[in-house]
Length: 163
Image (tube, rainbow, N blue to C red; front, side):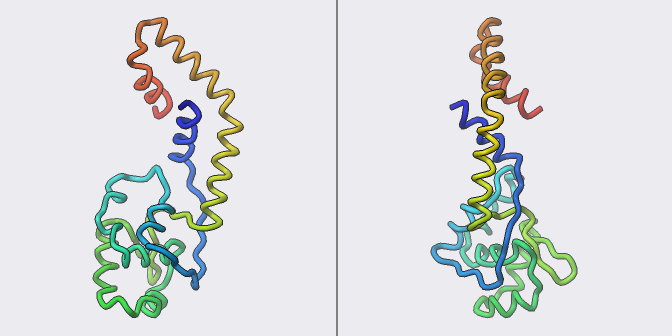
């Protein structure tokens, strides 16, 4: 439980690099791939958008994660007849943004090697900080119990960590 808390804290604070080869092949459900590659720790309102559940939008986002120009998008997604409307909706929902002729996803998406590197980094970081974190956590838990605040331990720890 305590180690899980450390992992969650690190996930919520690390933003990694992403890569987008132009010829990336999508095998499986693009919406599931996108969901697995979404970075944690960003605004809930963006991630809760129903636009993210659409597999065509998911395909678009996977290709926009490092920026892609409109000409490449039009060529790559010539099968999507309402591409411009989809891009506009994704921009309006703050899922995509546009700089000049490039479209970008407004949050990190980690797929493939970068996803694996991210988890290795998280695990190495947890291994480094866990012993010291555990000591501090145990001191806080001891103090809350001594003061009769045991039922508030979760809230106190959450407040100390995120404030």
